[in-house]
Length: 139
Image (cartoon, rainbow, N blue to C red; front, side, top):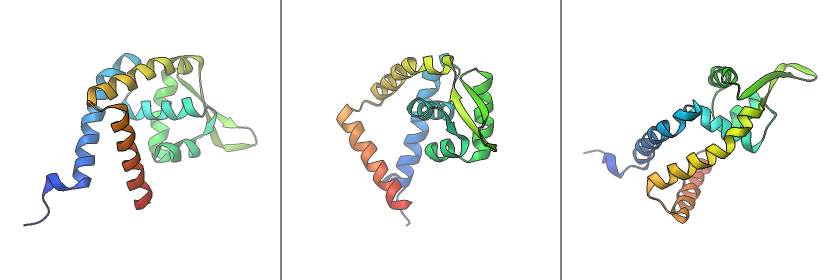
């Protein structure tokens, strides 16, 4: 009767995502970051000085969600939010020196999180590729 829960891709992704996010919690605690904040910081380490709109699209969060998240990162002195030159409706997000300095600690966090999954680097790359394929197909 009906689909079997543990045979569904959607449930497997959903439940695994929750467990991975939980594993990051203790790793991110020393930096004062939540997992969504960590995702935003990773995006900023890849591309600094970016509009809120572009950042929201990059990380897949809504602008209202981004607003409160960015306010908290600003209070931690990891980012600044300033109006873009020539467009006072759009804010530009930039890393502070403190925010930039977290990148090396974040590399360690990412390595520890991967280790905790028990996946090899090759398995992780395969999983990333499969998840990206799903995202593309469903977009």
